[in-house]
Length: 398
Image (cartoon, rainbow, N blue to C red; front, top):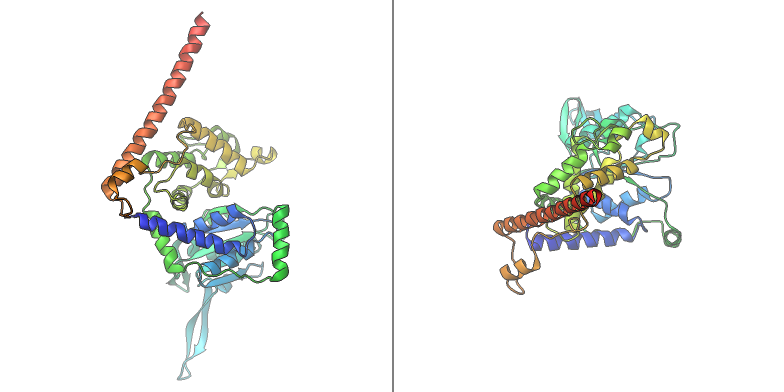
């Protein structure tokens, strides 16, 4: 059961994490926030950007801040799967007899930096599939569990074509987020140069460890999601499929293949973490809409028409979000982040100066009130629409 103490501890830890990251990474606040959200939620991240924008430095800094073993794998065309997962080698025992002994590869760490992942062949890229999804590695018929928490943070350069191998759909789908790392602004560029003139090394300190991260994940998993928000999220994912019952007009025109069920799982898991970061007990529509871009942009396969018209995946996602929001008649009032428990209810149930846990009954009551408020707002919106139509008909008859 999530208590106020859990929420406060979660918020303090997140602030400390971001504070330490800012000591080594200048700007890129959205990139840093999305990466931390994915790590707490237990997902893998694909960072895409031109060389020199701080992708590798960010991942190295995360290893320091979370105080967990960190391994870097530089992907090249001649890299073999055994170089990643490890292999059995022949060794001599004390009696001089030969035997096979497993030599673990760099993947047996907590944080894996797969640098320039699209430079390796598909054979080597596939060596990460099992580890990313099941958190196990199978070599010579023996499966070995990875040490938790386990993350793969991969980088790739979007501008190079020669000597690269695009990631297959199965592997792209295993990344929770695809984050676009943009060029720094003028002021940020000046800060970067000034900082690196002093030292090129990372100076951030540890803000938490693996156990703290797993505890934060367990706390986030207990955050409730209202049925209306859950249905909206699943409708948004289904609307990316051109042949589904919820298909959007943008998907019918520009999308060949939509998002998989992993997209729905990623949206809900990440939205819970984002809600906690903002000090809320519940997931809002805004959380889902903001996270739709990093979750969906690498899961959509565009049609030739989209490529010919140079319509990006982000533009298509924006169209789909707008269309689904219109179906649900989401007004600005409904998009306001509503806490599950109002101040009046909290003051009545909690003594002044006391910090007590919210029990299941209070949460249920609060969720019921939130649902009633949402339904009332939708009903008022429908009434306004009916009145407008009626007035238009009266004017036309006159």
